[in-house]
Length: 124
Image 1 (cartoon, rainbow, N blue to C red):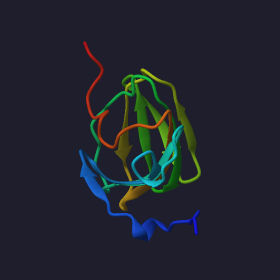
Image 2 (image 1 turned 180 degrees about the vertical axis):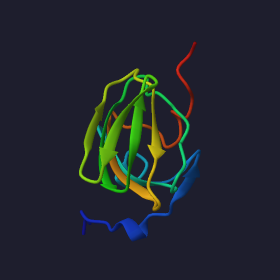
Image 3 (image 1 turned 90 degrees about the vertical axis):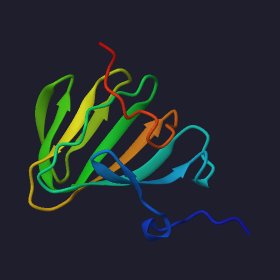
């Protein structure tokens, strides 16, 4: 019997620079999705995660808890719980958690990204 549901607690988190990351659905994860990946990440209170860029992936982020800023090519935009963000390929971005609690974000990439493969700054 094929299983179509999974709970976040069933997925082990991976420490990436500035965040704990759970890739839940994707080519190498639950569902073996071919065209998208989905997961959650937790950014520590009062920390700014390093910037990075996705060469070909579009990313959608939903802020589930916390508040702060997301920097796009060095320019900050304020975000709070309930904010939804679209990041096109090639845009350098980073998250600055300004709250006293972990910021939890929910994200999706298309096409899928390999976990942590994008942790680099834009080439100068």
